[in-house]
Amino acid sequence: MRDFLRNAFALDDGKPCEPTPSQRVVLEKLAGEIAKRRLTGPTIAFLEMSRPLNGLGAAVIQFITPVAATLANPEHLREFSEFLEKRGSVDYLCRMLEAAESARSGGCCEGAPGDGDDASGKPG
Image (cartoon, rainbow, N blue to C red; front, side, top):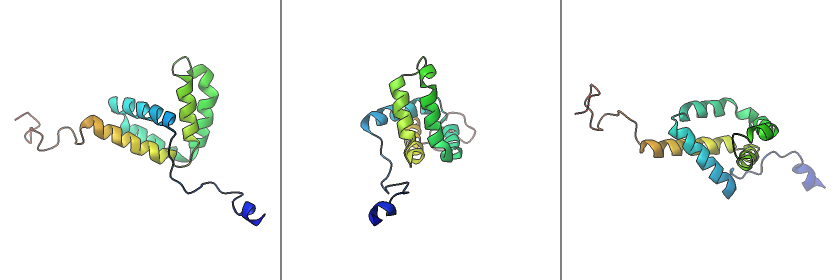
């Protein structure tokens, strides 16, 4: 009985958040689309600000799925909402977004010194 009560109100099992393979496919597609539109920065800022509400966000996604199914795959919405319910999902998603942005930009910043442009920004 004592072991049961010790973990009765535990919120986390101490393991890092890892998505299932089907969730990973959805997250990679989402991160790629966000990076392609160059919205990585605002998306990460939004995720960090709404970190305490990610469980609520997952419930909202499940609630609007019947209407949102006309715009998105309902299975992907379900997978994404199930992932958001996990602790550490925001950290994992931010890392995935940063990796997608890095892959999109080739690992360096556009217009950085040494990429063939002189200091005026004109091609050299």
